[in-house]
Length: 388
Image (cartoon, rainbow, N blue to C red; front, side, top):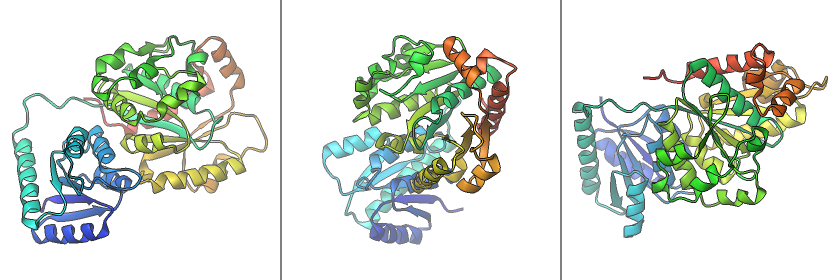
């Protein structure tokens, strides 16, 4: 069977000419003209080698490489950066992002083929002669978000984390990425609130597993929480810190069986960079007509970014007792998307949990809310690869 090469380049002429040249050499070719589409193809059907451009709009090649290296399906696939950026700093950045080789455009077809052959041969040798130690197991990462605020994203993320921990007796980390807008440290009385802020101030190379571990807070529910500051002025720390956020996620993948990431709301620049590297995305919606119109537009934008539909799971959060709320079949009809889980109103239980600085899941073990989160956690467990 011919080796498969994925070409990711926004230049259609490059896709066509390079693709034809490599096809003549006997390779199977797949092509993508932007970063998110390339990630989708790579995660869906991992190729033997990735030929990656750097200068692409939206998500550049460096970001694509980091996402490839953060996913267990693509972490070991050789990456050849093929770009017009020829400065030394550009090459250093490429290698730091995860590239195995770097080739500057324009180049002769024979030189490109030589680099491709060398990388594939090196990769094949590694597969035939693997290291003696088993591959370190990686965890399953879930991002939770909504199209707008006030839909209960943090409630869903935190209670799902508690359910997964209780059911698996496994390490679960709740990463609160809502810097400057988070209520979680207030609701759960988590101090200090500087964990995430401190990590974002570090160079990515210094954000080690040990550094993250030192900034995690253990909650009574058994989950470890990376706390985001609730101080509004801290929100600006998100700007320019995408690499730190991505590094935190990469480290957490090997620190916990499940990592639940509270992404807050919207498709801001940071969320657009983080979403492709997550295993699963939970979209929280509210069962009202106008809210679902907005959520449907949000879902369309999400899929346009190259996020596979199979990775998105919608939950309907019935926060209020209201006759104007739509039924689950109506929600599915409006969204043209299946509802994976439903959470019925429980204001008294949520108030009791808030007063105890706890979670609804743990306050009343026999409650309907706990049963609903157990059912949702069961579905997540079925989608996640079995722990080694």
